[in-house]
Length: 106
Image (cartoon, rainbow, N blue to C red; front, side, top):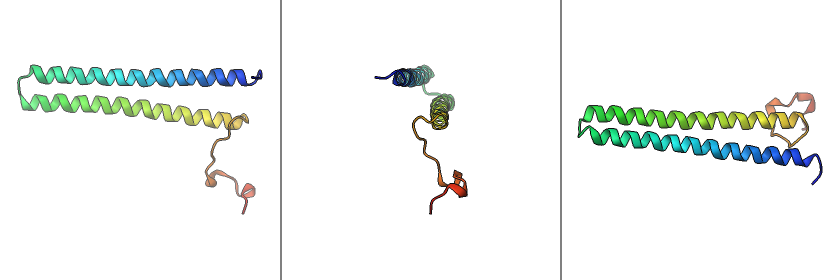
């Protein structure tokens, strides 16, 4: 492995670890929310209006947290791809509309 490849490989490994632990944190948080919601529903002994409120809040919290993680991860990956493309690293896919007309091939 050359000197140039070592930092790229180390950075790739770091990104994998970040993604793995970020996903683990989201899953653990979602499980904690589900457990709290189940315990709350169980302790209320059938009060339907409060149960609906608890389940709605739990669903909102889980979906918000998961959506936020996936959105932040997608934006991070896109930004990394753009930076690598500008530095001459791995090619990023460029949509045809973003290519100036002078550089387009017929």
